[in-house]
Length: 71
Image 1: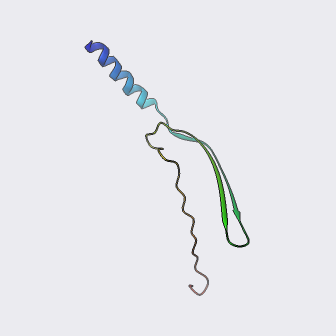
Image 2 (image 1 turned 90 degrees about the vertical axis):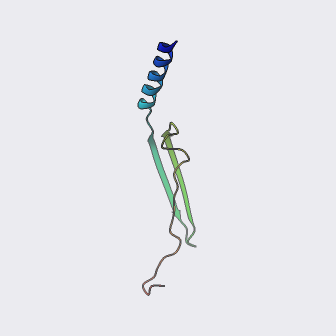
């Protein structure tokens, strides 16, 4: 029984080492409208084991800009 349990633990450990999380494909389309609206469509294909990639990718886009006079 102990040998079986040890073999199971080793196999579990080896499978965890071979797990790979990677971005397989990424495409982004940005549309800036005349009124200043920004529409972003991203298509991302990943291989995730839930170790590093858990909830997706977060983006922050600046919405306030400084003009030549600092306003």
